[in-house]
Image (cartoon, rainbow, N blue to C red; front, top):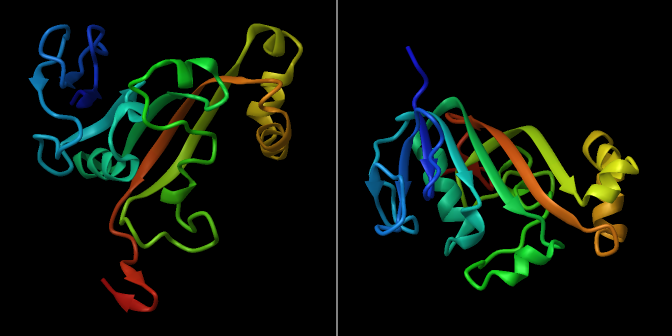
Length: 190
C-alpha cells in the first residue's frame, strides 16, 4: 500500500503523490484549503509522513503547529521540516517570518526534553532521525558544513560561537513520531 503523505503549506509545488494543504486560495497546488494556524481537517493518525517545507517559521505558534503535525501522523511515521537557520539573512528579510530557529529549537519535543525531563506543556514526542544544516558554498567547500553535520560537538560549538560569522542557511529535520509514551508529569498522571 502506498504511503500517505501530507504536504503542509505546499504552495504551488506539491510533493509528488502527496495530499497538499495550504491557506492560500489564489496560488496553490493544494487539494485542501485550510487555515494552517488552526487544527488541520484530518483525523488522527491519517498520514505516514508529513512535510512542512518553509512553513513552520510563518505560523503563529510552533508548539501548536507541531502538535497538529504529530496528531495527524501515525506512530512511527515521519515529520520532515525545512526552515531557515536564524543566522541566515533570509530568516529576517521576510516580514511574514514569526520564528527564527536553530538546530536545537526542536529539542523541546524529544524524550528527555531540553533539561533531561520531558516537557510538560505538550504531549508531542519526536525522535530525531536526521538533521542537515546547509551553509554558504564557501563553507561547504572548506569542509565546515561537513563538520557541522557529522560532529555534534562541533555543531554546538559552531552554533554557540561561530554562526554569526559562518552563517547557516537552511536546516532540514526529519523526526520519527512517538505515541503512547508514559503520560505522567511531576509524578502524576495527566
